Length: 510
Image (cartoon, rainbow, N blue to C red; front, side, top):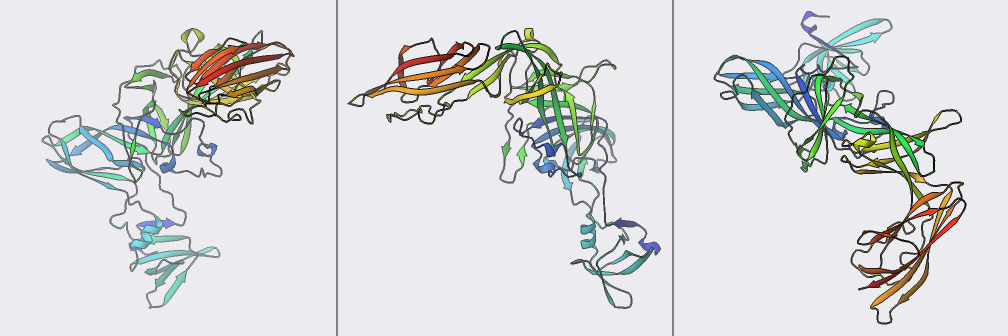
């Protein structure tokens, strides 16, 4: 191979590594994913392919880095190259910690035309290259002027002949053409009244990163069928596909419904978060998140630095595990499935709200998020998976899962697990009378609950007042609670292998 072509060699399988970011790095990660909606392939790639890239990872982060930069004069050009590939350049902020008053950025350019074999070939049309071919156990070098890259490579050789090459093992270029770079780079023109070394702070937003919470609960049956306890554990999963690795970074997670204004081009105006110092932690202690209120959200700060390699998933314990948290098993029967809520109209048809009723009885676990129960901390939205141990062999068996919204301390958790097998409900209309002048209507409803279990159960029966906004229950077999303007509920006990019947009459006016 000739010396003038020894500067750069690319094989057909090209891989460019992106250097790790500066050590003094902190990042706050925001999630835009719906709880429980993460495709497992996002964090469990098959054959190295997840089917995702940084642009469709449902989240973003605010990155803050502290670096030393050399400002050689009153006006200096600074290349800031180790940034995430999915940076939003409109969010970049530069600040000189050394001299913030006289140091300003006059101009910023974001260069992202990254080098690749295709782009190099495009730049070398009508220029000389060397193509390497394998013939048997020998390598053949073909030197010529590149004429075309369509359907392979077409070269004009030194003798004027044309040679088409479809299969080759490598290409040699004399140098890297202008305008191509190996990694995304911010280029600043910085003006300062204090030339020399400056400690600088750079912050920006990047896509390609997200987090979500998963809760793993083990249910322990109590002495009766309606009460028990749960062993409560939680994990946070972090996906980093930003195109950059974050080494020894100070990590924060923002939980809450943070609004972003999205333009027609898919870019978002970020909500900037100030970096905050973290308390010291004992060397022997495992990593732990410290939670605090931040504006109208909650911020979870990891007490030790963490490394997040590019194209990786990391899982950390979100809140300390809690054992024997009291849990109440509640069955809920909604015969009308609450689908006939009244929205201000009047519905006089006899069959409205009573046709095609539901017979399934839903099963929930009710947990109070209180300190005295071993919890009492703000819980980010996430998926709650519940298992129960089989007493026969000690194995854990999955019994259901549900999605929770952001839940403040001292609030109630209702975790739907599925439908009861041995408890069945039935709802029907016993009578319906419409006033001849269409001024009012009277309706009588019957709800039956059948318990085929050998233990008593407690069932909450939900009933919607769906015909008109004006209503009054005139007679009832059981006490009820008015849940809201259009719903009541009955809480009843159903004896083992018995049937319980609830009847009520409601008077509608409009």
